[in-house]
Length: 373
Image 1 (cartoon, rainbow, N blue to C red):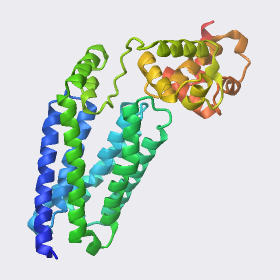
Image 2 (image 1 turned 180 degrees about the vertical axis):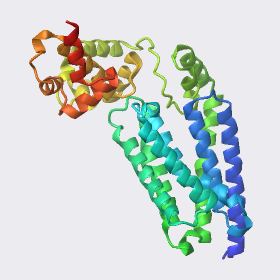
Image 3 (image 1 turned 90 degrees about the vertical axis):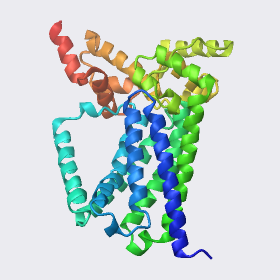
Image 4 (image 1 turned 120 degrees about the vertical axis):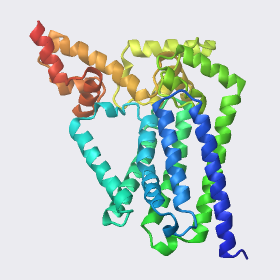
């Protein structure tokens, strides 16, 4: 049986290997063009490095002031992870559009965060509150990843959503629960060793995947093609990383007669405004068009540049809504009735979709049009 000192030695060795993998991953990321995705991944890697060092089998007093910095980095992971998941999976996530009160509240939370961890070294009841907030953010990140799974048109992103929900979210939540648990469980040598092994395996898989993507000639040429075609070069540069870029897909020529026929069928469906159906999903549309769902997803993404089905529906429906609200024949028609006619279940989703596209509510739009007549 391996003694505890031997376990601790193995633990430290594994953690050193994890830090080496993180350094390698960071060097690979630094070769990619600057983008929000790259910066968030780098921040997540630095946070994980802090976790690896802070939870090593070393007495706290030996860290000195370094422990405060490691606390800040470690507890920041949940916040960074939440931002990363929103950036990857929520196409409507636009922090730059947040109101000033929200930004002021975030600044206040940040000040408290750095005071509790950087000054008080976590010796405050507020530290448990930070852990609880981190757990809520990770659970919410898992919800965000799962919520958009059905409408996502990108196969790589759909697979990543599953990985997040089943893997990273669960693992991160377990770590935070252990932080809230009794100290004898949190500091158990076996738990620390298991944690190091899991991190090493995950990072090894991630680094090997990224290395293959960077050195696969076929993917390399495809990435350059995307960079030439996209309107967002920074995001396109990350295509070789995980095919999760926020950049719109390019519009290649249809590759087969089957795709051409399906595109014509889809155009006919749109021309007759079939998208006004209530509760229309990509699955139900595929059944109506008598085609495999995965083929329809790929076709919409490649030929129309959408990354999720709901965005396509909203764009088509809101265009029709604007036409009706500007038409004198609809002046006495309640906005709710128009929304229901266009396929919305209630006024709330319609108002949000309309404002997201036009920066004004349907009522404001109608009044502005009527005032110009």
